[in-house]
Length: 407
Ligand SMILES: [Zn+2]
Picture 1 (cartoon, rainbow, N blue to C red):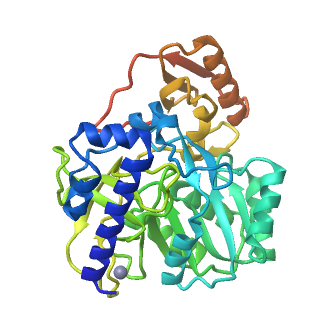
Picture 2: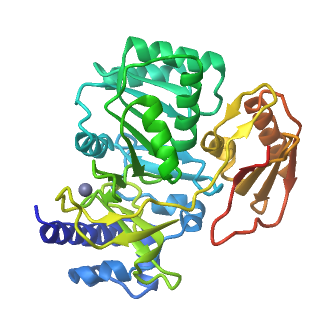
């Protein structure tokens, strides 16, 4: 497929998804009609990029209205996210389209064998039954993981043992956590069989970090772009020169401050495979830029530069345990009906402050108590925690630095 053919196919799918949404999803019926669009508007493929941009607030405040007429109990599952900006969110995934297909597309670019094992460095999947189900789903491939929430010498040891038993062909995880785990494995003196590839996400992969991870684990380290709301949107090829957007199933547009197409600006993404809870022209709000030239690899997929803007620090406990920032994003997950926004800051004395913006009508005392209890558990009762209610949290350069540490 040439770049031209791909762009025609993508435009066709964009129009189809928009047409589907305006016909079958109450939110879009109203939203698009209010902006002067109707079903016939999408006969013109150019109409798609004129559609109003969907904000996180829209999704957060209109959950029921985003559910399409096609949704059934069997074809969908609720997904709660911490969000990448400290603003929790609830949505539905379409089970008819496995995100795994996109994952495989990237893995094939990295020469990761189809039946290899996977090591994941990320937030832990809760509950025994879930991991049993996963084991069956992934059989005969073995997926094992280390909890990015809480890295201890024991957990790193256990991870290394599993690694030796089922050497992974790919290691996937948050940049900060992958770096930390790689360093710990080195410190513990492990010489582990090298994977085929390392895939990092959730923060920009700076050159120094890439080199350090690659040399510690002995494999190339590839950047990819995903979000809790839209899994697998873009990824590097072996050239490691920008992220290829996974069209025609995803689009990532870059817009300037005026929300018009720009070469540098914010990311706006569409998931063209979710028909139970469509997210169309959804502002992820990360910073990136368009790469105009074709990639040396010859693939037709358009490219963007490494995505930046989501900055977060790991928290450090007096005992030496490191809590990966990305793992803390689920802190408010169970309270998304009450919490509009949160911010976590660790001071130099290692104490932790949390600032919460609640929605009107939230039971503030109960929520504050529940969140401080949960955080206290996550931080292993090692440091003092202070939870404060505030009216708003300031944005810096359009982004909230939602987990920071001076420790
Ligand atoms: Zn390429």
